[in-house]
Length: 504
Image (cartoon, rainbow, N blue to C red; front, side, top):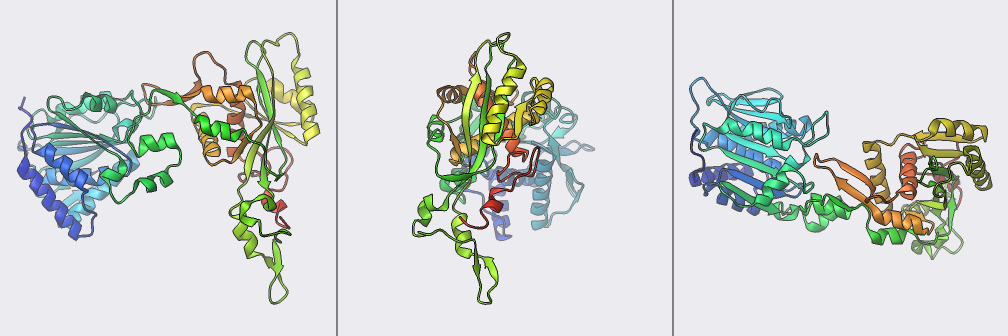
């Protein structure tokens, strides 16, 4: 086996010469941070460089320049009849295709002849092949590599299991450089959790022939400011992970306590749409059977600080110079600043062990009475007890819709709820049990890289489940008066846009 780990300062100079040529051709310059990190790495005896860099930090464009420089100037010893492969391992096929496109553009800019297909590019005058791989164990062996580029390692997912295969993929691909003493391995990613292979490698630090480097997005890529990254990602937890480059703890609070408290405020004066009843059923063995009413509302225009000067309201239609009825532009300007919100009210439950004490038809009768009193015609639930409940609710004259809870649907629902909370478009009727469950609701990252949600320990999340089922119903377009309403189940009612089109 060849001895690895030799300083290569001359190669770094050639890499920077390539960067200079590309800048003249209109390519963005390599940032000072990348230049410094690569210089230190190539002037060292290290073989592996583990990088933790925020999203849009210039990782991919820099990787492609390194790949081309290694292929053209690398001075790797390739046995006659063999070909030196530079594998670019990415999250998925789309990312892989982007790498090939970038390499092709670089080769065109420096007038280098090559043959290419969708997944690989071969130099015509040198036995070097640039080949993309998706992050799977199959296929990343059986060739001679002269440089290995592993991109977004923390985000890799096996298409069948959903588990991050990074540990196995790295173990399979490392032997491909066994005969190449000048080969370098780049493992780069924005972070995900504290449980993946990239995190483990980075935390080992500068040890043996490994070196590590870290930068948030705005340091690695100064064309983006820290403020700009906040506008790209408003969720603070995601921003810390994706742009500041802070790995997510294995278990953390799903919701910020401050936004939870803010959501439980008094409702503003508004015009509300038709409500729906949302339930989280229970068989009465221990979990609560929770329920609430959910509706979207649009604040009345006189209650908004932007329009205090409009004493008598604003007409939607005005007459133009020819006496034609046309939309009022002032109305449109003001309306753009007035945002609808979703409200949760009448939050309650059949608590504890009620099995044998109250029948299912009695529960449905009570809920049907609430619907009748509030004008609700649709009931939304998860799939639990769906068959029996659907029959009972239909007998009571109510439409029943069950939503299948799966890992993807739950993640999407939590994402919607987070957005409502962060954008202050949710009002939750003050409820101590709801408040406690929201504060105890955790985001958990599995060792395989999956995100799951649920209550900590043996605590319950029966009340939080109402919010998530409502989010699923809203995402499906089933909540009347919602901006996402598509008619859905039950009686069609006009949207708030239609209802407020005459006068605010």
